[in-house]
Amino acid sequence: MQVQGPDGEPPRGYATIRRVLEPLRAYHHHEVDGPEHVPAEGPAICVVNHSLATYDALLLGLAIHDATGRVPLALGDDLLFKLPGLAGAAWTLGVRPASHAHGVRGLADGRLVFVAPGGMREALRPSRERGEVRWGRRQGFVRLALRTGAPLVLAACPDADDIYTVVDNPVTGLAYKALKVPVPLAYGLGPTLVPRPVRLRHRVAAPLRPPAWEPEREEEQVADLHADVLATMARLMERPPGSRRGRGPRPR
Image 1: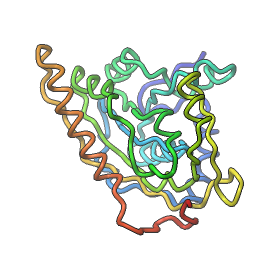
Image 2 (image 1 turned 180 degrees about the horizontal axis):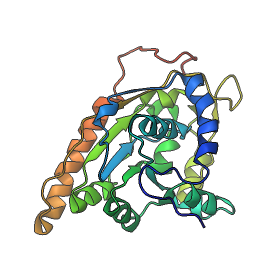
Image 3 (image 1 turned 45 degrees about the vertical axis):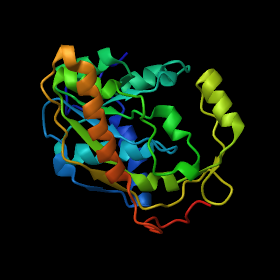
Image 4 (image 1 turned 135 degrees about the vertical axis):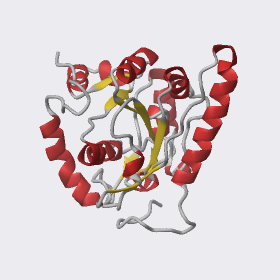
């Protein structure tokens, strides 16, 4: 099994990923505001929102590589490592199970670690909740930053929620609750799963630097830093009322 090399060295298969992502980047006219906030070197945690489309985060990773030469190390959903054929591909492409241990290891190696705290639960939320994040009790990434001293770089792409309309229905919720598997009822262009040609723009905030870790006050420190993270992400996800920045139709 191929393990991704040092930061900045693309993993095996990266060229294939780029060939897939370049047309999507052009299709969505993807841009990044604030790429200078991503550290050019050293350990850092890039925290992103999770849309149903998912590939918007990959477009951000591609833009970061173009701007800094860094290849992010992603912490992915456990489901990726349970499905036949996907586990090996995920490892080869630089994705690791979303655990504290893998995060610590990546940061110790000076990597830029990508996390999407909302995970599958956030990706499956219905379109009536678009623009929201589901990070309420998910504080592991904040604890990781506090214990390692790695800065948190928040990035949001609110328009990614317009790529698909996700219909609220009981099956999706039951499948996730019982089996932790994604069973969305969604559509893009017309009644199809072709993604809408929504114009995508990531906003990247200045790094949030954790305070010096005080083990005896860890829970208080985690709560305070998590509150700062949620407030920053809420600002990044804001869209003016009635705005239509995407080129495709707004979801109904």
